[in-house]
Image: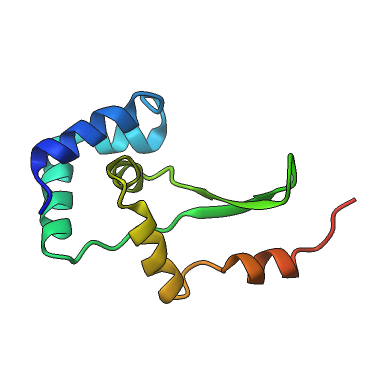
Length: 109
């Protein structure tokens, strides 16, 4: 069971490098309520990750990048629970798998 203290500590870490991003500022307007809602969802096992942006880079090697710009997902990442959120996305077909996206990717010159 996660506590508010754990979420708040993770929140402080994740906002360190994202302090002036639009998503961080939006979350921070009502940070306490947002953290309490996240705590409730996690403990009730009703948490669902929000949409994220997925893109491909080819340097230094070809790979998929999931942009976790949403503060809730960043908090989960610092807690070490984001891998579970990604597993949920994959089982719900909300994001393509590595094989699907990378194999179907057009080659850009």
